[in-house]
Structure formats: C-alpha cells, structure tokens
Length: 402
Image (cartoon, rainbow, N blue to C red; front, side):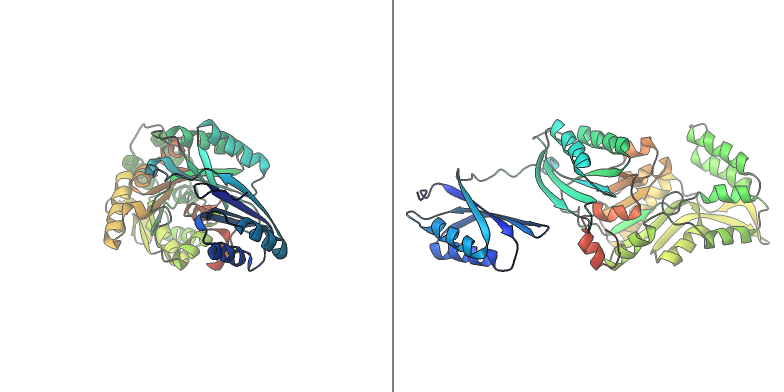
C-alpha cells in the first residue's frame, strides 16, 4: 500500500558496498518525484548501511521499483512508515558535545563502560565515528545533553572512568565552530614535551639533587611560591659547568608522540610554541630539533663558562605563561578559542584556562580535574584526535599514526 503524502518512509539499504548504489536509488527517487528529507550512510568493513528518509507522491509505485533495483544491485532493502518529521528546534550550543575516546584498542568492554556513563547522565548518542586506522583505537561520540543541563557532572564522571580504566583516555568537548578550527598549539616542556625535569637532572649532575627535591616538595605543598622556589633551586646550581647544560639539552628524551604531533601540526599549518618554566638552553634546542615556531622560558645566567646561580630577566611563572599565550595569539591574529594549551603541573593551570582547549597531560589529579580534558594513557599524538582528525587524515599528513 502506498503511503499518503503526509507520511514519510525510512528506506534502509544494506549489503556489500560497491559503486553505483546511491546513484541508482536516488535516480529512481528523482524520477518518481519523491522528496528527500534526510540521508545518512556508513560503510563498515565493506558492508554498506544507507538510510534515506523520503516523502513519496500519492499512488506511487516507487517502493516496488526500488525493491526490484535493490535485487539487481545485490543489496537488501527495508522500509518503514514514520511520522512526518517536524522541524527540529535548534539545540543550545551548550547541549551539543563530542566525546572522544582514545586508547590502544577500544573493545566492547570499553565502549560499554563509556556509553553506560553517558546514559547515566542523560546523554543521547546521536552519532559514533571511528577515527583510528587500521585498529579500532579511537572514536568520536556525538551526544546531546538534556536542555539546561551543564556538562560538568558528565565531565567529572568521564575523568573518573579514564582514571579507573588506565587503558584509554576520554575527552569531552563542546561542539562548536572552533573544535576543528584550532590554529595554534602551546606546550609546556618538562614532563610534557620531554620526559624529564631539566632542573632535576642538572641538580643530580651537580650533586645537589636531594636539596633541590626538598625545595620542590615544599613548593608543591604551598610552603613557598614558584618564583622563590625557582630562585633557591637555581642558586644551588652555582658553579655547574655550562657544558653540562648544553650536553643535556642536546640529548633531551622526547615524550612518546611528540615528534608526530609537531610534524603533523606543521604540515597542517598550525603555529606551535613552547612556553616553559624550564630553561632556555633546553627550550631552544627543542625548538630547533622539532621545528617549533616559538620558545619562551627562563634564561640561566652564565659567566666564564659556569652557572652563576641566577636567572636573567622575568621569571616564567604561571601568570607569565598565561600572558605569553595571550600575547602570542594576539600577535599571530589567532583567537584564544583557536588555541590549544598542554601542560602537566600547577604552573600550567592559568595557561590552560586561557586557551580554547586546555589539556592536562599525564598530570596530577588537581590539574586533570581543572583542565578541559586530560590525556594519561596515550602519547602526545593523541591530541590530534582531540582536534577532530581521523587516522586516515593523519596518514595522509605523513604521520604514520593511527
């Protein structure tokens, strides 16, 4: 029985994918004068699922024609009469989000745990897109939250899930114009872009490792501010031969995924920067080694080939990091919403807050809770998935990631 004009039909096509399926079916619909209301297609492992929501003219034999064509094409066709879709209300921007899961492998157990959290917070899954190639290691889940519900509770629940799992990271981002429109990535250096803390390595080389560690511990517990802790630690390095600093800077151990991240960002035209409370000898070495565009950090004073135990110029502390991020973005004509900031410590918090996307990388729980999102299981190249890139796009960009 042909449905009247007021009713709509959802046509579902499944089968082995090959060229010409969509062309043939839409051609028949066009010939019949059908109104196409919506369309969606996905191909998984060579198997096609195509959905066409149409409104057919009265007394139409289109469905019979489509069934015959489907048989010729070697696909199955099913249809269901549905209510005529009302014009949907545009959801509030705050209600539309993307959940990105990144791991070595995402299986049924991981996706069940993730979607269980989403369901528990009233999030409706609208679309799931695979990002990684060739293994299923990363997906984007597009969700909508109930009207008026802030995402904070869901964000914290996803953070807890990520911390408990230990095998994959989960990021929640607001779906907006700027999610895939980022133009600059700013990174901390020590324990972020590189795997070590340079000042700790220098202290050990100078035989003052324990003293420096005690000062660091006091600063972490709030017993002194960052500036004072840096002055005291640098003072203990007085007399260290500058060659030790240069040798360390020439052999910095990069964090997993650092080279891939910077290489792909540069290929895609992003601006990159290091903004660090560490030392300029190391930051400049990384800038040259990786081709980073900008580097800002503390400068150690050197006289007669030895460290004097002092720094030169203004200390790059938390406030200074945030200021440098803002001024750099302004100078480059980039909106703060288009900036990504990555760091691991309390000294990075203000910088992460100023950026459109602040990422806590293998960070302490306090920073992870305060940041927009966090990465703990993967390498720095996981950030590329958070920018909305797919594994296929990463391979095209020459990263070899995915």
